[in-house]
Image (cartoon, rainbow, N blue to C red; front, side):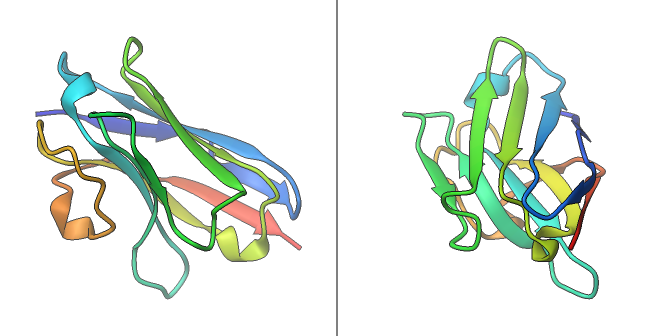
Length: 126
């Protein structure tokens, strides 16, 4: 089992940047496929970006491609989300999630992720 703790959220003006972090407990972080999801006000939780533990494959939602970058540091058991050129529509609670160990495919389906953090709030003002 792994525990996930997000940090780095905050209030930023449109066009600004933030970097989110997701710190994981456990000694097998390197075998977890990880992802970021977000849930805006009155919206369903949606996939943002994911990083496979195998081969370093990444995937992004169309809405964030070219603006967000996902990365991970297995030595620190930490995943990051660098968010640039933020827009008001990026305002949401951002969650870190992990699939069961060994699953290498990045999935946009939140049902495939069994471990979740509590979320960190990102608010982008216009």
